[in-house]
Length: 103
Figure 1 (spheres, rainbow, N blue to C red):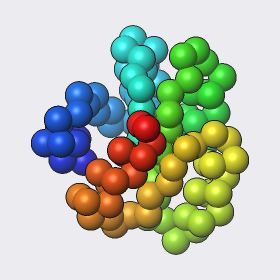
Figure 2 (figure 1 turned 90 degrees about the vertical axis):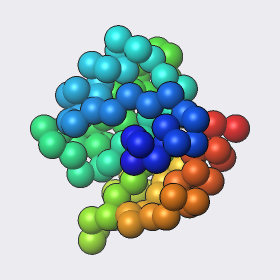
Figure 3 (figure 1 turned 30 degrees about the vertical axis):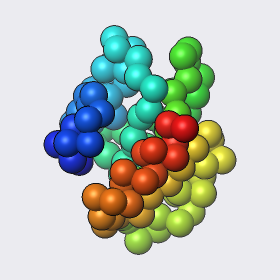
Figure 4 (figure 1 turned 90 degrees about the horizontal axis):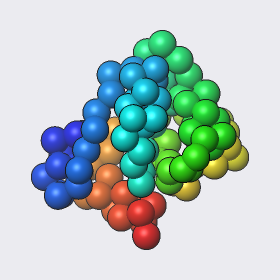
């Protein structure tokens, strides 16, 4: 996904876990954060809640391919995610969601 977004000419920082992602965001705040709701070390909803409590508050896209994703994605929107995306997704659908979230 990082390479795909880079190919669309976005500057991308990739994190392997929620802890790493939060640390990266604190060191280099970004306009947009894409959060998988099922990630190592923490829960994606916890990441969204932490990002929403901070400053600056980024725009957040939540994604999931888990079988219980509908409830989780709804919860992500309730916490402040501006968009959601279901996995698997196409390059075009990812690009479309990112464009809408940024604008």
